[in-house]
Length: 152
Image 1: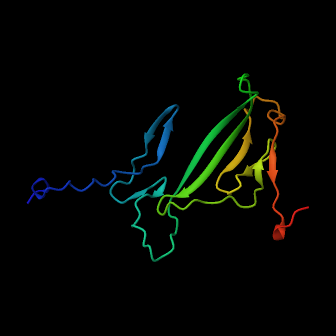
Image 2 (image 1 turned 90 degrees about the horizontal axis):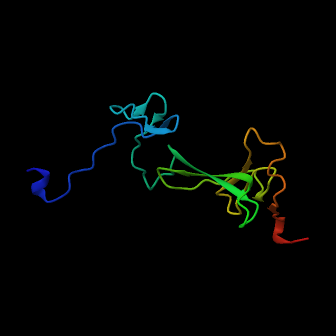
Image 3 (image 1 turned 135 degrees about the vertical axis):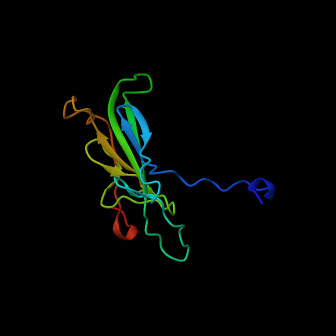
């Protein structure tokens, strides 16, 4: 009996090849290698067995979200005074988010810092043609944690 006579949708087609995105100048295209084996010679294994909920995830494949923020002088002045890249990572198999370790919490113009929940890294960047002090005039903040919950 064919799938159309069973009344259900045909099973979804397996991905053809490596899903990684490559760039040809400004044009993105899919790598598409290793369709037969599920292993790309450049990017490695891209087909994984379904996760077993009774075993810890080995985090076989990660996804990096990156976003660039342009900080302007004010709402009325569109002059860009700084750039910040925001990075976050999650496992594609189990969707668990990863925290940034060893980075202070806050938003600082002169060094990387993470969000208070440690899921997003904020790192200042500047164009190669900009002066070394580009972006250093913006205000920042840091969150200081005290051991034992006491404050001074």
